[in-house]
Length: 53
Image (cartoon, rainbow, N blue to C red):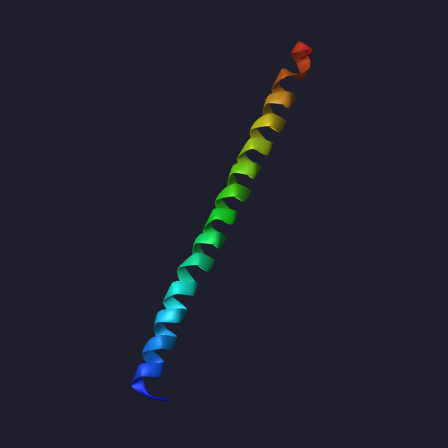
């Protein structure tokens, strides 16, 4: 492999890599938000149950 080919490979990898990482992070963030929302609704339901809501 020539240096030019390696450079192209490197550029291609760098262009592809951040998208995958960002997509992953975005999914993790959504999952975290889902978990927090789920916990908050569950806790509030449990807390408000004796009140009759």
